Amino acid sequence: MVCHETYKDQNGKWVNPEEIKKDENNNFIKIKDGSKIIVGPSESMSKSKKNVIDPEKMIKTYGADAVRWFILSDSPPERDVQWSDQGVNAAYKFLQKIYNLNYEIINRKDKKGSDDNKLNLETNNYLVKITNFIENFNLNVAIANAYTIYNTFNKALMQNISNKCLKNNFIQFLKTLIPFTPHIAYECLELQNQNNEYSSWPMINKNIKIQEKVKIAIQINGKTKQIIEINKDLNEQEIFNEFKNEKVYQQLNNKKIIKTIFVKNRIINYLIN
Image (cartoon, rainbow, N blue to C red; front, side, top):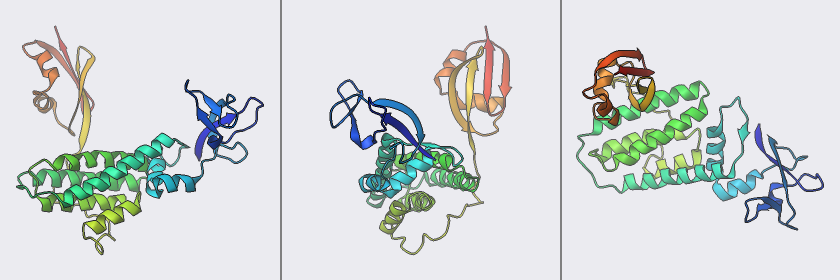
């Protein structure tokens, strides 16, 4: 169910969201006469409580893709969605970023491909994860991962990655957006000259080693000092080597470690004097 705040006037009558606004003190008032509005709890949208948002108005303002993206990203399918105009606006802005990035990749000057393998690996890891998330109906988690891989491609513009590699991997990313935002996905694919080649789901390259990432807490005397992202299933020494360039390492340097408490893929706690 899609939920929204409810509003009542001073007489206890339901008020439509389009009939109210915020004053200079950030309080809700009625547009017609300036009277105060009582804000109620968020409930399932219904005509009787007048807390309905017109979908046609939202689609006209932001587009169908942005509305779909927000609804799917807000909550898992089994939970209610709390409607937010700010949330739809944020979704709209993110899709604009994807569209702009598509143009940047098309018009980018070619570079040496010394970092191609790294991008191939990251994209392949993303394809594995998003495929699993969609199959398990973890749609909001799938969208969260889309933000991460977008940042990867955005950074790749400045790295030594060939245009061919960057374009091919970005096309795979665009194909994964089709179930969520078909309009912008198809538009970007056409601009990439993929008119007849986007009907199938991207293939996972089994020849590329999949490196799953986890976040692990680095603790000193039971207090978390830093959280780092590392490859899954590393041992104590490998983790220690991973954060040698991090700030937390300076707090351990030249200190006597009395004991190490290690929980695989979760925490590593150093007890020092």
